[in-house]
Amino acid sequence: MNFELTEEQKMVQKMAKDFAENEIAPYVDEDEEHHHWRREIFQKMADLGLYGFSIDEEYGGNGMGFLEGVLAIEQVAKVHTSWRMAFNMQDWGPALTIQKFGTDAQKKEYIPKFVSGEYVGSFAMTEADVGSDVAGMKCRAEDKGDYYLLNGHKMWITNGTVCDRGLLYVKTDKDGGAKGITCFIMDYTLPGIERIAITTKVGLWASDTAEIVFENVKVPKELILGKLGQGFNICMTQLNGTRLGCSAGALGLSAACLEASIKYANERYQFGKQIGKYQLIQQQIAEMELEHAALEAMVYKAAWLKDKGLPNQKETSMSKLFGAKAAVHAANECMKLHGSFGYSTEYPCGRFLRDCKQFETLEGTSNMHTQIVANAALGYSTNRA
Ligand SMILES: Cc1cc2nc3c(=O)[nH]c(=O)nc-3n(C[C@H](O)[C@H](O)[C@H](O)COP(=O)(O)OP(=O)(O)OC[C@H]3O[C@@H](n4cnc5c(N)ncnc54)[C@H](O)[C@@H]3O)c2cc1C
Image (cartoon, rainbow, N blue to C red; front, side, top):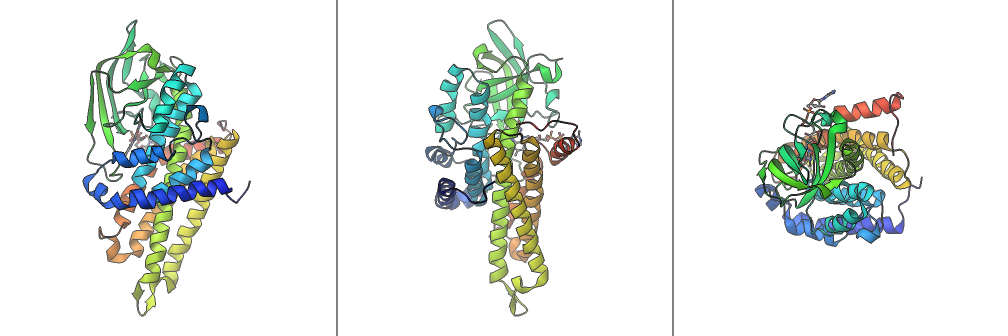
């Protein structure tokens, strides 16, 4: 493994950093205050090619892989963690999954539109009663000959009120368990769909989240992705990609907490000295540095394994699990280190704390990732590519 980034990777990193600092940072406070998903930022990310990692150039991809994608997500998440979601909703969610499972016609029709931002994307498996137990989903599409009739709901869907198309996982065989799930490239302009914004979130305030209700929606059969009943397998494959997006987001947030903490430790004087000179503060900083460095190694390694086509499910889950721990710890330490100013909304510590908690739940809770890591380590499951 090479520990130095290539010139191209450094360019991606710098491009994403400059973009985040110039185009996202000026809107952070306003968008947080109004819980606003800003379409202009979404589109500028597309125009820069940020939704094209791991996507073939013939479908509009940028010809680069997971490692370059991770570098970009990290820089964006460091400035405003809400925007790390956009990568998964376009690139490693719908676009890459269609590239893996779609027909030629589907690839040509949909992937370029997710990459270019013409379609705002999403993926939906969660329901109010069904989270970790994906196979237990109830939202159902019945075969009516010419079309599928869709009824039910999905909950906690990122981009739920704004998406044009997205991966939708539903039961086509209600008693079939995991084998009864089918994935559709859902068209959210079809009649019978109601979208209800979830405005009570603890964090991720510049990211759109919604409940989506389907009532007698007639879904054309050509929107099935892969085979009938293959949805669970497609879902797990998709999640193994998008989970790395979470890990990279946690890495970005951890970097933001560390940078803010170091700055404040050097600026703040108590008892006649910079607080950074006190051993207890040094311990906090050293722990954050250690965890950040360990997380970086895990995230980059998982990305590298993916780019090589090697087994990586365990390593991806390790980065997701440790990313949540490191980000939550870093955000907590960051606020403590800032004293009362950390508790003020004039500093970003509160946002860091609100945003870090997502990593313990989204795309598999920490308990679920603990199981994946342990089962692979114990030899109870095979580590998959
Ligand atoms: C902001 C936000 C955005 C989201 N975006 C999306 C999206 O775009 N698409 C989508 O489909 N979903 C999305 N989700 C949903 C998210 O992925 C789920 O919430 C998550 O998978 C957990 O499901 P749950 O909330 O139902 O928790 P549950 O599965 O009910 O879990 C509750 C608790 O029980 C634990 N638990 C459950 N089963 C076990 C077990 N067998 N062993 C040990 N512990 C267990 C869990 O670890 C957790 O601590 C989003 C959620 C949020 C908050």
